[in-house]
Amino acid sequence: MPRRFAGDRLVIASHNAGKIGEISALLRPFGVAIVSAAALGLPEPEETGASFEENAALKAVAAARGSSLPALADDSGLVVPALGGDPGIYSARWAGATRDFAQAMQRVEEKLAGKADRRAFFVAVLALAWPDGHVESFRGEAHGSLVWPPRGTRGFGYDPVFLPEGATLTFGEMEPDRKHRISHRAEAFGMLVAACFGAPGEGG
Image (cartoon, rainbow, N blue to C red):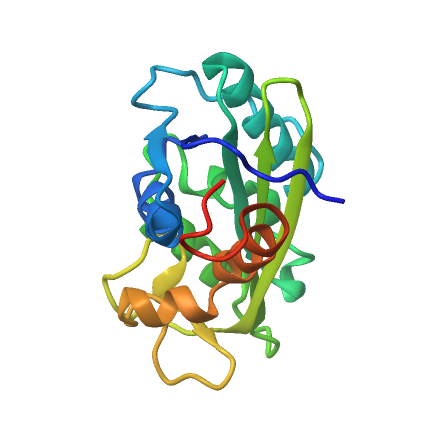
């Protein structure tokens, strides 16, 4: 059986304001007090894992041990089959030290030049860790295709070039509430909630 979350405070193990905002919004119905790793002054561990699952777990465990509180980490990225799965776990690194995702989106587009296959999918793995090192992990995916030029200014990362299956708006054009219903992070979050949190208002 998955371990249940039984506290009233949770650390979001991220320094990415976009991710912190999305995860905080998803957790709001559960009445959990959220604090970010950045606000606690916790350093970002080096992402040395070979998968989204490994990187999410190492970030969550580092934040849980550093704060002595349960911590939730997200590792996510864009997977493009025509590029051999790139940028994948290196999605943030493609944006460089300044997190310039306009540069990262341009790099993806340049590498796709001449390729007919523009399929892509987002992956999000949420890892919930406790200070004793126990981890529960959940993986969500959102499938679609890549458009060019980028469309929309909402969301973050590669959202402006990602068109979900069956949609006419990119993640960068969608209202946040709509994106939250169909995103990779929302799918992973649904699994996390079912396993570790229960119904909204149920409490820990």
